Structure formats: C-alpha cells, structure tokens
Length: 88
Image 1 (cartoon, rainbow, N blue to C red):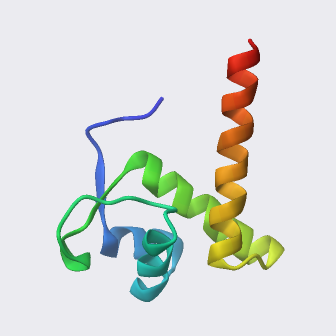
Image 2 (image 1 turned 135 degrees about the vertical axis):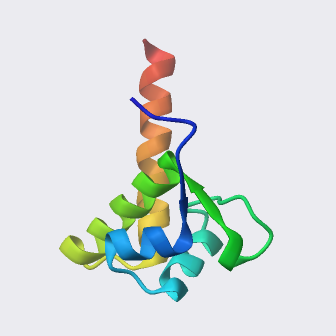
Image 3 (image 1 turned 45 degrees about the vertical axis):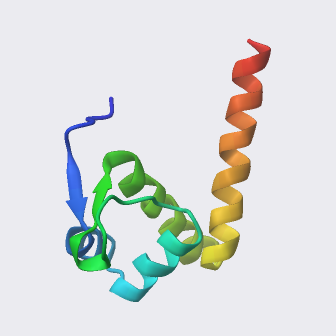
C-alpha cells in the first residue's frame, strides 16, 4: 500500500539507491520522477517516485539500460498496465 504522506529528499534517494545527485537530476529530466520543489536541493519525491527510481536503477544495474531507456521501459510498462485495466 502506498503512503501518500511520505516524501523523500534527493539526498535520501541518493543514499538509498547509492546514486549520484546528477543521476537523479537526469532521471527527473527524463520524466522517471516528478518531484515537488523549485530546485534540486529542495526536491521532495513521493513514494511512487522513489519506487520508479528504484526500478530504473535496477534496469541499469541488472540489464545495463541507460536512463533514457529506463524511462521508456517504465512508460511502456505503465501503458501496458493501463491497457489491461481498460480490458477488465
């Protein structure tokens, strides 16, 4: 169950997934996550953002998929889920 009241700072996300801030910035630029806040140091990520960053990180670590490829894969997975829900 997702908790809508939990937010993560960029530093917390970096620490959790052992990522550099520039990698998080790139993921945001490619639409993997959509944090609130007006500058990277102030960004707050939802739990959904946190999980998407985790999936993108696993795509990179396990399958050597770069950030743009991970963004595409995540979008395709989401589109597929939506299509399946429409058919139900």
